[in-house]
Image (cartoon, rainbow, N blue to C red; front, side, top):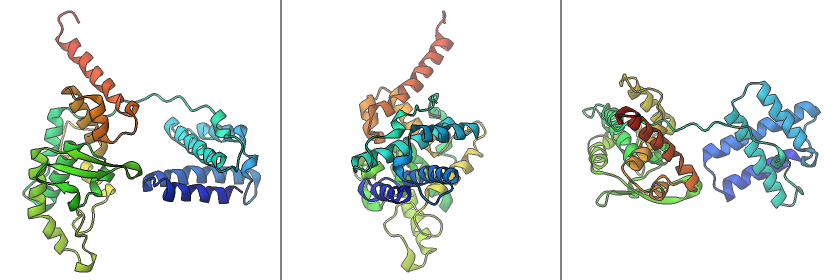
Amino acid sequence: MLNAQLQEFLQHLQYERNVSPHTLRNYTSDLGQFREHLLNIEKREDIAVEQIDRLTIREWMAGLHAAEKKKTSIARKLASLRTFFQFLVREGKLESNPAKLVATPRIERKLPVHLSVEDAIRFIETPDANTDLGRRDRAMCEFLYATGIRVGELVNIDLKDIDFRSRLVRVLGKRKKERIVPFGEPALQALLHYLEETRGVFLSNCPEADRNMQACFLNYQGTRITTRSVGRMIDKYIKQCASIHNISPHSLRHSFATHLLDSGADLRDIQELLGHARLSTTQIYTQVSMEKMIEVYDKAHPKA
């Protein structure tokens, strides 16, 4: 039955594929919504997976379109269904995958939002390095831009993961894939400033039994900082930079990749630094740089 198969699939994702908590939440939400849709139609507490066909799935997709859900959201839900049914096929619970026959909504691929080099530097230097929170925030901003790591990877860094002498950090990415990323002297100095002047202060705010002695970046209470707190921090400094808008913590990652490409870095090297499993994911940055090249040409060439 559907309920049992869903639980088995979610456990497979968590314990066998080691997906991130964020990915697991998305699958749980998407598949849970599909289940609720079916149960509301059937007026039953459960339904056999063999009864689900492509028409059933297309009807759900049509309902999502009618509710004016975003195409990206609908495409993700369909991808979740495909992965779920493919799991059932591999396990011998189904003969074929009904979601494979349903067309994915056409999505216009947006270029990543990134900062110019000047704006990136101005944004990173916004935190007041004369205060405890400012020193920590400056170190995190420097580190995000210097390494291109994801915010989820940043908050999970432990002190033992950092090689200060060689300026390297060990990062645990998606699906527990480990990679080593270099960082520059400005990031090192900002990090040392935070560790020497601030981290101990934050630890002292926390009861000794609850202190996180391993985590590099802490909140004011002396525990590991969360991705949500980093997002709030970014929003705070955006408001202090009048000409910078519509950026997120991920924008520093996009800026890192775009600026490396603009400076002549090889696309495959950037792929390794970002931790992308496929080169096609990294290739979107070539579109960003192409747009910039066309813009420069139009402004500078006498016959443009």
